[in-house]
Length: 329
Figure 1: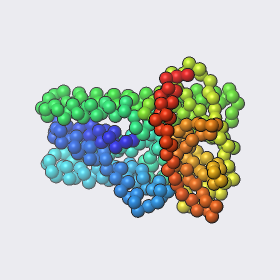
Figure 2: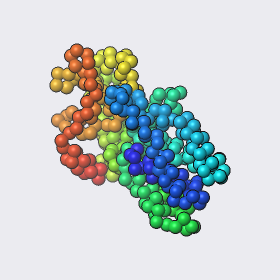
Figure 3: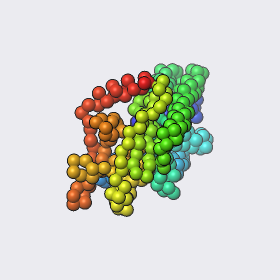
Figure 4: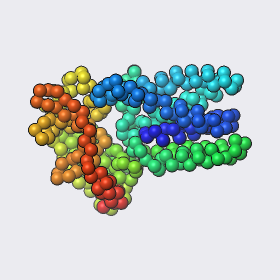
């Protein structure tokens, strides 16, 4: 999730345990702890883009990291304030571990069991930036900053902020399950056989969803709004170059990339070169009967490759169309 969301979530969860004891300082401590797991990005400059996929959201986002760091911070806090070690442990653990728990809700996912497992886990119930999740925590933290430490309503503010933000995540999860069921029914009705199905939210909302459908030969893509009156799905198909894909999946140096794609990799020829995309976020758009994705792994004739960053120059137009589509067909 975005940095602001992690900061206010860390602040609110730490304050849930320690606000009565240390007041506004709990927000500061929680904000710092909630940010720590993402400090793995400082290592990016030492690695290439593919290696970075193996580093980000790995050990710093695992439950073991949160547990060990909580033990250390609890020791420091209990020494500083001369109060219960256990309560400081739980405050620290909540602020730290809710960070990867929130990241699990996004399509990017996180490796919460690393190093026991390098797999990404994701619930796909919220986009990586969603104001309707963050706003409740942000308002709660701002209100607490202006309230006096002795105000008995501070605890109520914390609980309401956490309740409303969590309720939004639950709504996203229920919506995902509903849309998944709708996709399954449509795939059966249209007699499309498939191996994997992934339902993901579109940017900044939990109303418009995309489905990524993996088959033996390629991938189908479709979107569905909870406000749609037309229930049938119009699938767009992209044929996958399976032979090329399998030849690259055996390369050890590309393992972080294919692990990140979670099985939703698409290989196709573009401008005389072969490219592989991780499609688990769904297409940015479909233009001229072609799905548009970002970040292709592009291969040169000599076998070298580069993970590019394609940035369309019509982002405003794309998001305008997304908002129109969100309102239903």
